[in-house]
Length: 469
Image (tube, rainbow, N blue to C red; front, side, top):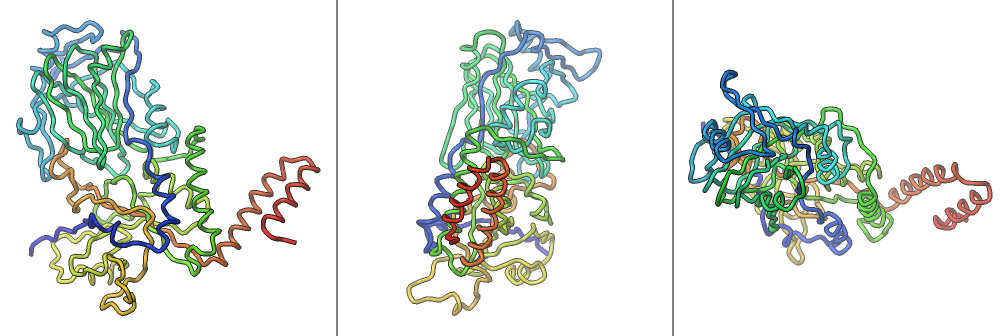
């Protein structure tokens, strides 16, 4: 039997074709969920004693380097000690200097005196990538590799290989050496950013390190080094196993409130899905998935705006769930939503739609817009649900994922998949009842902190707002 490749491709024209009659009302979500870049970078002041590196493959041959006063000869020895750096290609580690030219030391062959967890970097990463979602102690770091890029060294565009479903990104420290070139270029969709760490460190006053932290699904490359040696240490970033919500900073409160307000405005509008229905949100980030993964387990590892979206849905007691969007190659009318990542293995499947929607409990969803005078009920294959997309599902490719073509390391079991959030919206009558209950809870909390006179004024104001006479 020939193994099937499960295709998670979402049509690039889908967002233009499947238009919702509520598109204008849903536009606010696209404005709110499209702002901050998927990375943070800069320089960090350090003490000279924190720039000490010990390295060596054998104890008797270990060396000590002080990067506050390192020489070219010392860097040349460090480079000569490294092995050629490989990259992941179709689940194999490959050495090909046409794609990546650099040296590497594994984590067991070096030690660096700079202590990342005790620095301000964890707070910076939490504030910029996790949007304050977790407290600092819940971010786990794994020292991964030391890389040396000499003259003409480079690394073409790639995504970092996911090493677990709780891995969310990478942290790259650039050590202070005299070099030119080797800038880090990051790309996300049609956006691009360049971080020239060599230039930034030259302009920094005093001992420093350069840093760049970014989500693991962000395309990035290292431009050729023109002169000198670019030395970096990379850490894998993981969510802690016991995630706890932390207090947000003021800007995050505004974003959270705007997102929650957008939902509340729609729910209180009698013209919006008066009989109820389903909203769909294509998530902004990709996530490492394992075969047969239950997507409910992914909720605690959502990143950035995706996490904020799920958080608001939970606060509003909305029925929100993650689904895997599968392109149905057998039908132009319906695609498939899976509640987990199906492991098709080497099964010989004649009808993917029947297989997934039968014993696997997947749902059919409309894949195109209705033509004039057309009705879903008269399609040969009818959608189980009709989704009104607030944000489109992003084109990420097939189940092998972009990293399988080129990544920083071959992957064993984790892959990037195309995930969306589906929110069930009740009929208008039930929404107004539940909104009054939520409002009453908020009123009770506010009244508990007020004086008697203010209490009475606030109560009459609430009754007037909700038309209680």
